[in-house]
Image (cartoon, rainbow, N blue to C red; front, top):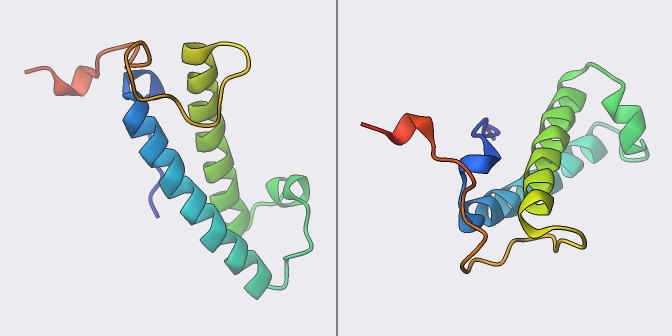
Length: 101
């Protein structure tokens, strides 16, 4: 899976939630790969210190989840839920520069 590089500040609440759902599925598949490789007992911080392909994928996944989570906390405030409400007040904070014509 290719992990998005899109700025979370330009994403709607629904887009953030959908990406988090995809990342959850990707994390599950990645976990299966760690188990198949005989690395199912590794702690996440142990894997993040390594430079092999599986660890690189885990790093990318972890960094993207962290960026999306940080955006949720910026929009929602303290005690933010794991997904943003998709109503008014939680839309994109910035316009996506790539969409202007």
